[in-house]
Length: 127
Figure (cartoon, rainbow, N blue to C red):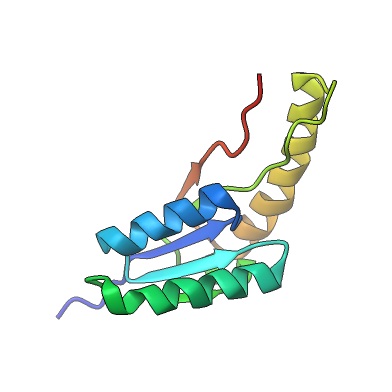
């Protein structure tokens, strides 16, 4: 009997993060899906919405909103968080702000004992 569970954590429950979560649900890619967002209520609401969709999916996935400590035994942490470019802001300035966002995510994830794969999804592109 195999007890190894496939666990994915998504950090950022905006449009990109939830599109990714929806795809994971529809394709039964993992056994456990954790949603983390700076706005905890949003992550909770999105987890509830996905759980309602489980009845129509071919999946017995466990979905919940969590904390960075939940990354300790995850196989993949998907970073779907970032800030949008402000009008007149240079790409270098945008990069600096997003670097700060990434540090605020990566430090607690690695501190949890996470030893898996980071997947970074670009969230906002402007011209």
